[in-house]
Length: 238
Length: 48
Image (spheres, rainbow over the protein chains, first blue to last red):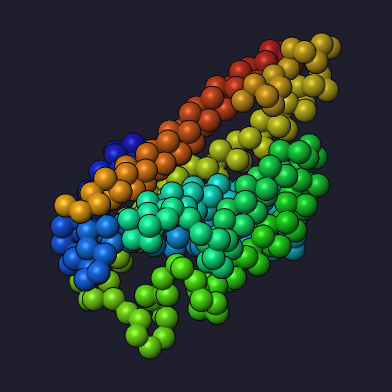
């Protein structure tokens, strides 16, 4: 318990310092000025979502090769965390775009592929809710998850391959790209702080999924024993 | 500060989404833990 409190306080301090650095230490961007400071958490959220979707992809492949349900649980946890970070990117993006572009949204290659990515992983979670049998649910969603991951590299290359309203990449974007060293340090700090928030949540979400499996197994056992099936708690109760 | 309202809104949105999600996971865990305990209890009573 003490360890957990110390860890939470450490993460809170890190997040506070990252927020302070993004708002006050990072230098002002030449053309966008203050509004560019959204970048530090916008890009950090995208990096975290890409990492989470990669975890889903790896878990899906691992499940299909081993048929062990722990991989399926990890896949669900990763998908949910990825969707949360993707949602943050999709909320902060338009808030940045409105004062800079004069519009909230445009259907360019980067924004469209990103929106499709968000929808694909929502569909991944919805699909799971439609299937009762755990093995069938895990197999079908693993196949769907692998298919959904194909959009991740497409999002990454979209503003490299096509002309987009979305800015060209500042990291690994070729000649003319790059960040001021202080901006790069602040970005790194923000990425670490978002990871520090999301990794423990991912672990908790994984534990929750494992508990749900245990609950489903015990419920099945209770259903087989109970004379009146209405006495057994249903999945809907949780 | 120019466009401060957009910066503020983005900032608030980031923390609101994170907080809402963390609370949602914690609430679901606590509910499921209670349900699991109740079910285990039910099974123990059924077998004794």
